[in-house]
Length: 52
Image 1: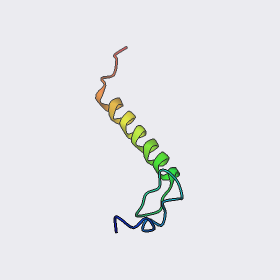
Image 2: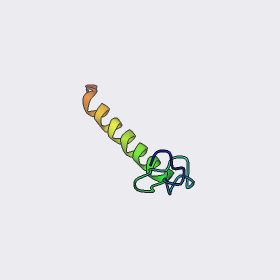
Image 3: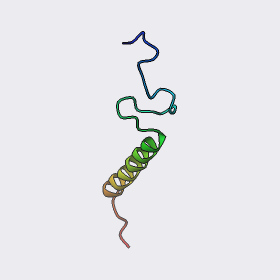
């Protein structure tokens, strides 16, 4: 399995190809965008609000 160069069928699709699903670079960009939005919302909850 590991020594067979023809085993990964999706190897030539893209550099960021997820082997099990065949998802390409768009999947990783969407995942990164979701993670950044989640991080921003978490930081917004933690940082105290300034009183006016």
